[in-house]
Image 1: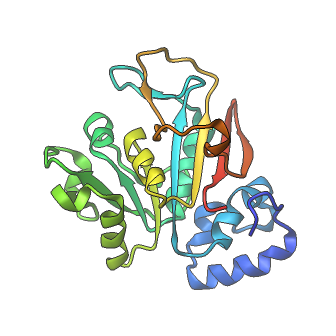
Image 2: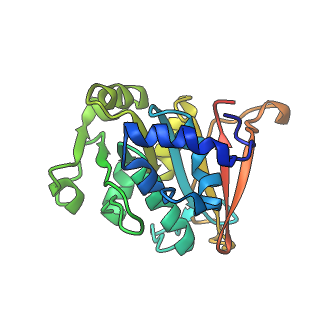
Length: 238
């Protein structure tokens, strides 16, 4: 389904077929009612793309930062974007985060702002330095250490072997950038807040340099208003 195609009411037939395959999907997206409105428009393309794929999400400032120099990121984007993130968690089998995110935030990575199932938590720990973190004590968490955590392709293969098919790469900026650079991300949700962090802030997406400008990544995009923030939905497979 094209990323810029509106979701018509008739597409509910397809969505309901998906619901019969996974009865938590529509609940997690807030789409269990036909009156879902903008939620239908926002998430149906993701559902219609199938049960296998990789999506990524980041929230950043106007100057491209996801946190201050010290790592403070509470909160760059607003409540509507956090609800959006929890919906994405409810729609995937597993959510992946890197060591910096776990070390700084020790996130729960659960669904709390919406209805729906919690995903499997996947923590990447290439250096094996993460120890006393709450997310690691959760029996549902998959803790990948050393070589098995270094390559996005290796991580994805490991998760597929565990039956985890739809993956959300949530953070931080380096981890999301690695997966995008590896060509593994199908859809990127990048939310921009009306905030300026400054030159010392921690960067979001950081990809290898490209010349000339015409060769730079410019994927098809849709925009969603999330309170004061703007979410850019980028189709990286187009």
